[in-house]
Amino acid sequence: MKNKKDILILGIESSCDDTSISVVKNGREILSNVISSQIDIHTLYGGVVPEIASRNHLKNIGAVYNEALKKAGVTLDDIDAIAVTYGAGLLGSLIVGVNFAKGLAYASGKPLIAVNHIEGHIAGNYLTYKDLEPPFMCLIVSGGHTALCEMKNYTTRKLVGTTSDDAIGEAFDKVARECGLSYPGGPSVQKEAQKGQTNIKFITKPQNYKDFNFSYSGLKTAVVNYIHNKKQKGEEINVPDICASFEKEATDQVAHKAINACLAKKQKKLVISGGVSANLALRKTLDNLAKENGINVYYPELILCTDNAAMIASAGYYNYINKKGIANPKNLAPTSTIAL
Ligand code: KG4
Ligand code: ZN
Image 1 (cartoon, rainbow, N blue to C red):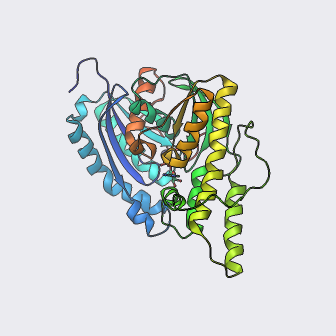
Image 2: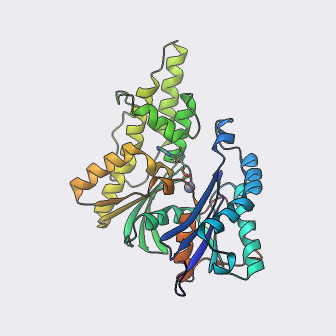
Image 3: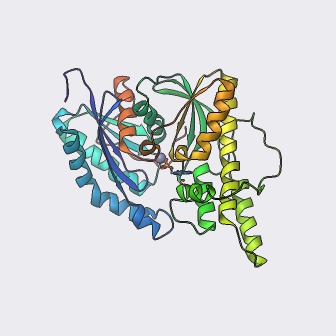
């Protein structure tokens, strides 16, 4: 299972509503990736309830840890370092994973690596594409972030653009709620969109795709106002058409800007990461634009798009071998926001 030269990282992720622990070999090979999802619980409330998320992490994390080691066929003795998401995310959720990791590191004397959740999402691609190496352009599209950055090497990135208001995933979730669709919003909107026409124009002013910053609050508000107006007039709303039209405008913005950023910065590789990278309309638009412009696009496999600990273990591996992010198990503190 493990040769002398192999490096095994135990990854721990608890930043939102998934409790996940994974063992990854040499940053690229998943030996286990156990994810305990709380979707069924939060669906009852139409979104993640932080207090409930935190209590459930606490309830599940011990069993998830045992299963992750068992599936990987290893014990804690075989692990070289423990990597944990310390931010960004829900503080009450992060505290559970961080304290669990601190306890393990302190008791075992193994190094503790503090991983930025976004770094983890980017690393999800190293697990999918074994030969992918920086430099590349990266588009991060999640519930909390919409950003473009250049990965100069495994541990250094340069921000190219970010959202001035909401994140794209947040907009998907809001539109889903307004349309009465179930949580999580992104997959529900995508499912409805596949049955609809892109015949509604929510944003009428021309878009500047050469500006690499993003904005989603205008689009989100336009959809909400459209639905409210229809309802006030007693008219039916066509959910599939609303979802298809919103999805197109939302995904066009990130796709065009990402391709233009690659051209401007002379990057031939575009790596997509974060939960919204699962969106099929986004993938189709990006594939077409990339082909026209001679750019290769990389998406994580679907299970690695949304939150999981394998991506944290992979990012942890690159930090570990480059001596970055080494934390003190006595005082590592989680943080709800981290600048990209
Ligand atoms: O990366 P992620 O799992 O958590 C954060 O770090 O935020 O992303 C979650 C976001 C949610 O907003 C969810 O609605 C969105 O990703 N999402 C999607 C799809 N699958 C998940 N959005 C659009 N289409 C999808 N298929
Ligand atoms: Zn995430």
